[in-house]
Length: 374
Image 1: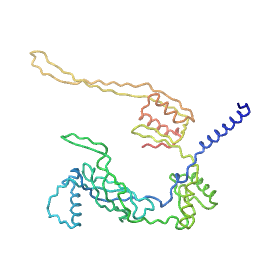
Image 2 (image 1 turned 60 degrees about the vertical axis):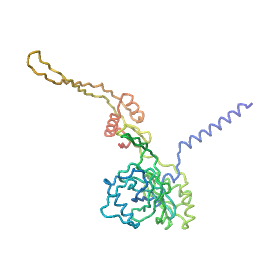
Image 3 (image 1 turned 180 degrees about the horizontal axis):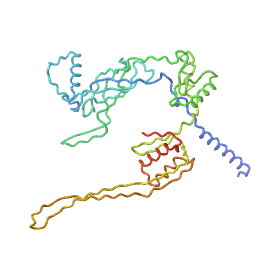
Image 4 (image 1 turned 90 degrees about the horizontal axis):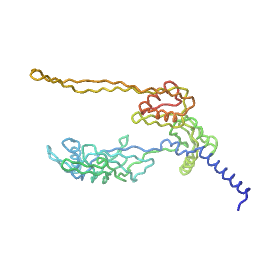
């Protein structure tokens, strides 16, 4: 059995632990790796044009895609097969495709990367096809990788007697490890004893905090901010020491500055997203609906018997205008926008009404946030 003194001590300890946990939750710290990237360390896009063969009659209709036939003839000519001039080729198992991939940073010759194969013509499906050797070029028109392999399509489909069933997309596939890197992208990372950190979002306060964290850990003068996004950091000259230094910098924890208040509105769905509590100035909002209903009914005029008249068909239109009573809401200064949105929804405001009201609040200067419509 514990006495009252021991119980009080344990309660005070638990309270202290809870207070420390709340403080750690309140002060959110992110790694520099999550806040910034290193200039020059990025992927490069590659693209190529190729042919997928071995399809089960689901390839391009060559009468509508002449470039497929031209590609096949060119390929056969390079292999020593001469196609008679004027010959009509009815190909059903070949499809022209575009091959795309991303070359990772520091990729070395001989490494393999995944590629995506997309139909360029009117092929019904790439399922079961094989991509022939396709050079992949970069923005400088140089070949950096070669792709080839069996295309994996995640969908399935079948058609018979005019009926068709399809699951997922059949004209796009993927080849895991389908390309081999042939050329390395030159990189001079830290060659001059300096690297550039680029913040994911421009913020002068966050840039200052990153500089302070690096200088506190590695000494004054190690880092300096060029602007609100780019931070220059001095690095060791040796490649091994440089890698260890960059790894240590990326692992430092920094509490990013609170971003500017912003409200994002999707005009199609009426969704409202706020990045932090957004407050309002004193304002009043009036909400009311005006509806107009027009109904038209046919009216038949039938002449009397033996009157030799003609039947006449006309229309009768009725117009009704109704307006629901407007509701005025008084919003006091400092109110959070999240509470205002809930109140507007409770009085029946539609997504379009909500969009118009928030735009009017911003125009009136009552909304303390940047309003962005997507």
